[in-house]
Image (tube, rainbow over all chains, first blue to last red; front, side, top):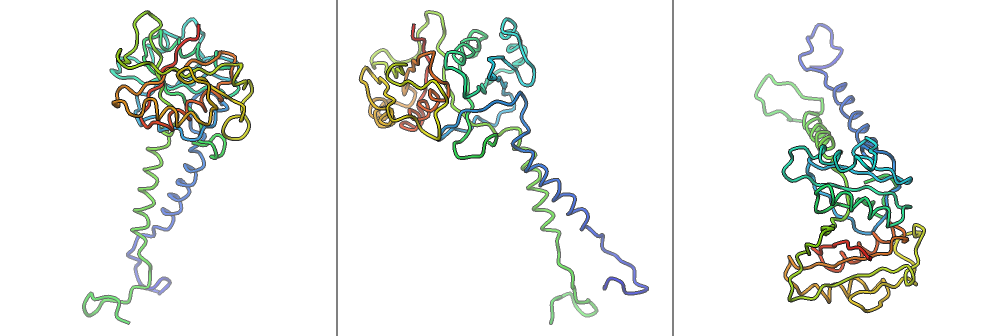
Amino acid sequence: MRLGEPGRMQANINITPLVDVVLVLLIIFMVMAPQMRTGPEVNLPKTAKPREQGDERNRILVTLDQTGKLWIDSQAVAPEQFGDSLRAAAGTDPDPKVVLRSDARLRFGDVRRAMVAIEEAGFAGVGLIADHAGAKSGGE
Amino acid sequence: MQVNAGGPGSELQSEINITPLVDVVLVLLIIFMVVVPLLLKGYDVGIPKASAETTSAAPDTSQVVLNIGAKTCPVFEPPAGIGLPADCQVSLDDRVIPVTDVPARVAELVGGRPADNRVVFLAADEQLNYEAVLRIVDLAKSGVDDLRIEFVTTD
């Protein structure tokens, strides 16, 4: 079969537009990947070898921004409600994991207070989120 | 040129077959969609109970305490570049050592223990910069693979 040949039916589906669309979607995802994170922007500390923080979906993301305000996912939380909100976020999850994104410019004492608050809410450990040094800022 | 072995009557196929390409690209797309929400890296640390209950270090082995003081390691601003200032010293198991020796000393102290007892207790001054403390955590973890870090209060 040759395109443009008169009088012949074209039997193949033209999938070139499909490929175009899918490639564009792929590129959009690759560009969006570093930005698709809930919670406010923070300047994560850069370290040499951060480990993967599990691929569980039952992760609770706590953010401590530069002003010392606490966030659970994308919701700012008052300090006095933090414990209750955290337990509510955990729900009935049997093994919830709390990860803490804290701004690199904070003092250690601020972060430690957040960790103590997490402990008092009933969570034994916490994952401290960092950026891989050398990766571009805001990246994974 | 005989491309098709499809028997008599089959025509020469002049188009590239892009179906495998589409397959691969679609799979890549799905992988990205799944992985995107899960990309987070960091350090697992323990927070011992504030109450009197002590943590799980077996009583027969001594507890290794890594103490980061504001006097010996005065880092109050995010450290520039990677690593820590050269003058930063920490106290590990009651010995003051330069921070660059931390991985080797941690490996020496707890590397030989059974895996579930590789614990370092970390006490850091509240005034210190968080990024500097986390970089010291990184150094300690790079010395022993499955090291557990427990944060303790200094007071």
